[in-house]
Length: 450
Image 1 (spheres, rainbow, N blue to C red):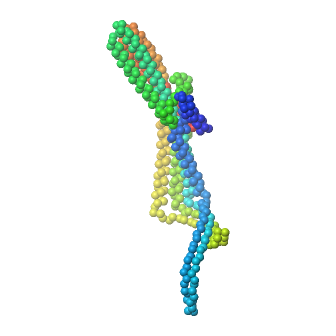
Image 2: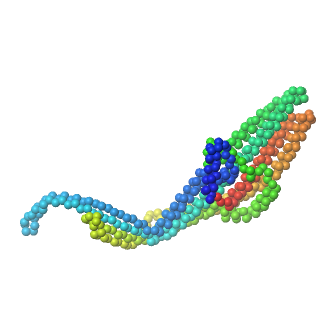
């Protein structure tokens, strides 16, 4: 179902600009589906799963007999010269020259099967199965990672888009203020120095707007590249479900979900695909130890064969029939410590895999703790930035009125305006920091599957 949905979304995203000559808009969900279908890391992870599953099939093949069929034909030509022979009585006789041609036909069917190999087959099946599950878990974590990266990149676009708006609005305000100051200076109500100062402020605003627009455009390019679409095609990114206003109810309800750290730890360990991948890698390494020790045991193989042959014509192939069967036992008594070295290496790999499991568990706890701290900070920053915008708006309004009445200086107005711009930037950043932090917590817990 995920495949067909991604195909539909991708087709819509790719065909829109060419069919209609318009910019195609992608929502967050649409961008996520496209990324799951086209991101090369996801494609590679899925390919690794296919390779690992093929290994499982090959491992089970060790329990099946090996069957081969053969057939051959040979032609033998003999050209013998005449000779003189002497018999026991002293008489002689002549053997005339002779020529002969013989066709030889032979076909056969042979089968062999390992009956016991020191538990190597069981170890191979167990190891291949564990590697297959590990690859599947890694692929799932890769999809989770790409989804989170897509979400972060998408939110960064929306953030930069809002920052462009903030910078543009500030430029418009300062342009209007420049017009008023210029007119006031023309009639002698303001100093010419104020005009020059405001002109420099407008120039700085223009520079900031250009920089903000470039940052916004780069973030769009980054997302298009991440989700696997053509970078040269123009896309718009707008999602009506993402708002700059976060309700108090949403803040409180989400905070309540993340209060019990011990419960979140338990859920993370139970759900995280990379943790389960590490566990399966440990199981595969344990199977490797069993496989390495298998050389200490004898191997028993059963074989059977059936063949047909003739030295005449192919039609007489069944003149000679041969049936054979038997058992063979092989036991390496000494191999120059090769088996011992292989066992020690396998045990070391198992220990490394065990340490990896423990380290993965520690990393999950650390990531979860940091994600919750970021989430808590994002919530507090949003609440503070709302108050900051309200205060900065009033402060600038008062400073502008005082300056227009001649009771305040241009420096006071510029300071108040800079404070308002910074407050608006802080609000935009706090909103998207909060949303990103929330999605990061979900990513760290790892319960969502794709």
